[in-house]
Length: 144
Image (cartoon, rainbow, N blue to C red; front, side):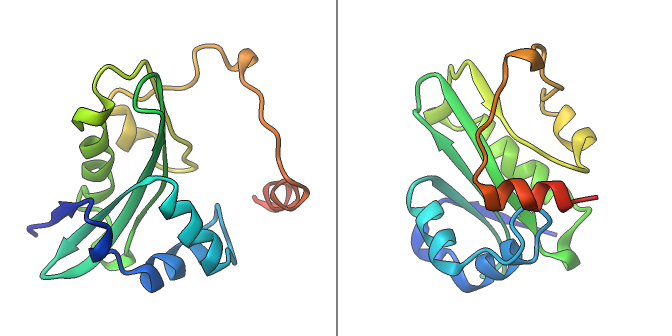
């Protein structure tokens, strides 16, 4: 399967991306306006075959010291073919992220996929903190 990766915002199928994210375990029911705002404030990437979007990911970064890769999603029918890893690898190799000291991501089930790209568990988890909205905290507590 030949897949094209592109960060051309005009190619993004926002309705499809919203559908994917709204059905994901990490952002169930997310509003479309919030998805649009998240895309506007990040570096989005689409994966395409024959002009149809198969996947999506985005990076949030200062382009100097830190990047966060988020919302990596591949359409069910295209999973298991390395598309998610290819999208994350695209960001890792992107010139805008060259020299970045720390690139983070969160996954519930793809640790082995991203380990092949150099990702590993936190070396100092005791130093990391987070602040969650009440809605996010409730959602995370309800997850299996």
